[in-house]
Image (cartoon, rainbow, N blue to C red):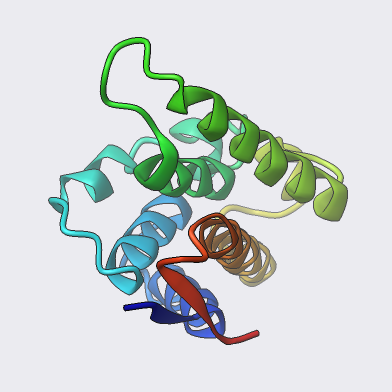
Length: 156
């Protein structure tokens, strides 16, 4: 049976988690993908995403939303066995997500994406909520495309 995935719901849910202060970007994306795709894995994966917000623990480096999206891809395409060649697909899809983000936003560095914005200020929140939604929907679209025998779009 093919499960329909509503990618707009994924965007709205991930953005809502961030907007409401429930989760930061990386956590919101991982939780949303886990729940919307019905993955039967522990919520510990959300905890594993907790160090990435605000550019890797507040350092301002790589955008935490991108890292959350990469983690979400890894849940589907990552390897758990040593020397498993699945790692190559995970890496290729990660590069795709990276390249799409960079094309759309020019930078992956959190401090450049939010340059001139005070942490937690309305413009900063708006920017990060939007980035969270962008990455959530892009990761979901990659997953759906790659697993077309298991998932399909409900809406776009």
